[in-house]
Length: 193
Image (cartoon, rainbow, N blue to C red; front, top):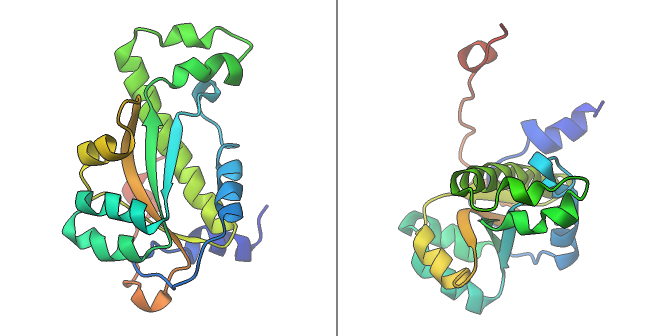
């Protein structure tokens, strides 16, 4: 069982950041977070999440026109912005990732199964990725509020990859945090039957 300090790092003290310290994020940390996140379970080990890490000024300028106005400043000031996406041809990697069955055949030509599986499992993996970032000492700010079609055309043209949401990554500035929003209690959002 994790101790209270570890639980605080991952859950109770962790926050969604909107402001960032001007401090570079070492690529080794991003790679470490990836390596941790892909260890989380996905159905048939399908691992459909794909990420483009937008770090350079030139790449940020490509991203900027597709952001909602309220997301521009916090994204442009973040050391890295991850475009969280899913590969609509994830099943082509199943012979490698799930070699003990012909899992590829479960998806070929089955558009609805592909769509649901890719979106669900990549979103799940993105949750693991956020927890991995927290575990290695980085802060994050996940967000919607951008033009998916524009992002897809700019960053994934000619590929089967589709964007889902963005995560700003860096060392958060606690002075720019909002007060923590309320959370639902167990009885408001869950039941045991």
